[in-house]
Length: 343
Image (cartoon, rainbow, N blue to C red; front, side, top):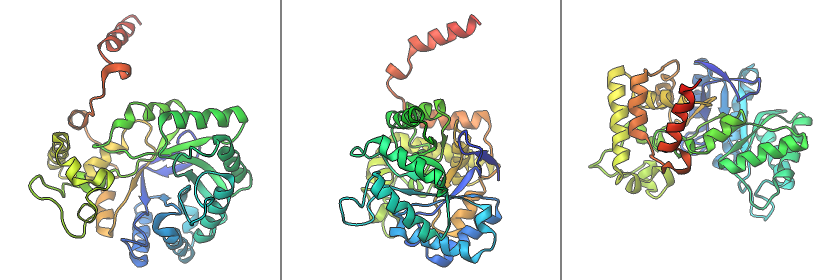
């Protein structure tokens, strides 16, 4: 395992993190505890959850594991999130002081800990002034309930506004951003990644394997059925087979990952994770295994670094090809080359 800081903070984490969204739903408690043991034994430190994962059961499972493993709390960096509904009332959702105060205390109870290392707001809330959210988070830091704060699923302008207002008000600012990011979803490189880099936020990518696409489990001629995420809900976001399977780029990326994996004698998942872990500003990649076997394979990406030619092949196959303006284009490239040549 390799280690990096959470953005520009001084907190060090493993470059592979254990995501726990499956805990309490697809992964029962005993299996979840085994995953946590396996992750810790491999040198992993960052464990990420959220209050809405299995309606709080994921946090409870992590709390029971911490209580049963002496010294485990000191060895892990514990991250959770708040924002989404945890009740039916109008104040049981959002980034208001009222909701976050209740959500944070509930997470602390379920996790059975005194403090959370990284508390992340799970998504932007258009109804709550960002100043209200930031003041609450700063208060949580000052009270010792939270060590660092992070953002999740924010756009570039939302990230920048949060950073700027925290600085203007002298409040604790975010150190991380948790976005969806993988070889099939690179559009965040247009604005979100540059915004994170400019402000020193470390990225914690979720869905690094694109809902299973980058493991090679789906085939052109075989629409998934049965007990898979795609078969159960084919309209689900990045995992929607009918939408992605009709795009030639999807299969170009899958074929490129398969070719690199064959040359490396590695699994496709390990190659996709290695590519992502070495992207600029990435602090840690969040693994989302359902089983211990999947987790063990994913952990094989630790210490794996692709060559320049392998990375270039994956970059070319997965390039989302944005419009030249305003992100680049011949004019900007020409000027950049001229400036570089004049130095």
